[in-house]
Image (cartoon, rainbow, N blue to C red; front, top):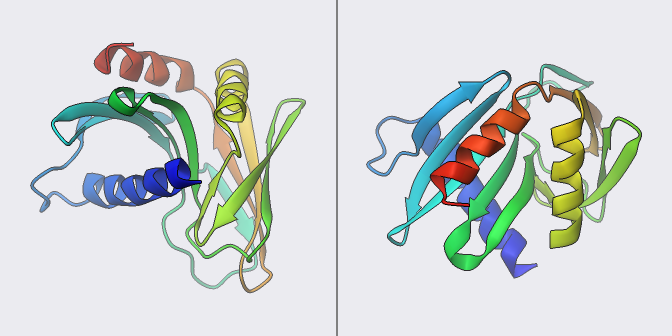
Length: 171
C-alpha cells in the first residue's frame, strides 16, 4: 500500500509537471510512440521513467472531469518496475474497484481518491504483459457521485514506449 501511495503522489506530480513548463524539475520527454509518451524524471538524484497515455474515448454522464491518464512507472533505485497507475480525473467511490479489460483478460484494481492500482507487483507485471500484447484497453470506474465511466485507450505504441523507458532507466 505504501508503494502504491508513493507512486500515486509521484504520478500526480509528474503529470502536473509534464504539462507545466513553469516547474524547474519537469520530466524530460524521450519520445511519442503511437498513443503513448515515454518520459524520464529525476528523483533524489536517480533517474526514473514512465509511459503515459490519455483515453481515446471517455464515456459517462458527468458534467466536469479532470485530466485522465494511465501510467506505467519504473523506479529502478527502489526496484519498483512496471507500476501501473490510473488517474481518473475524479474521486472514485470509496471501497470501489476499477475493472480493466485488455483483450480476453480482466484486471481488478483498488482505488484511493482519484487513483487506481493493481493490488500486487505480480498483477502489475501481468497487466503490463497484457498491454504489450493487446490493441486496446477499456477501464470501468465509478465516481464518488455514482457516475459510471468507461475510458478506452489505444495500446498502439505501448511496447515501443515501454522499451524506450527500459533503455532510459538501464533495464
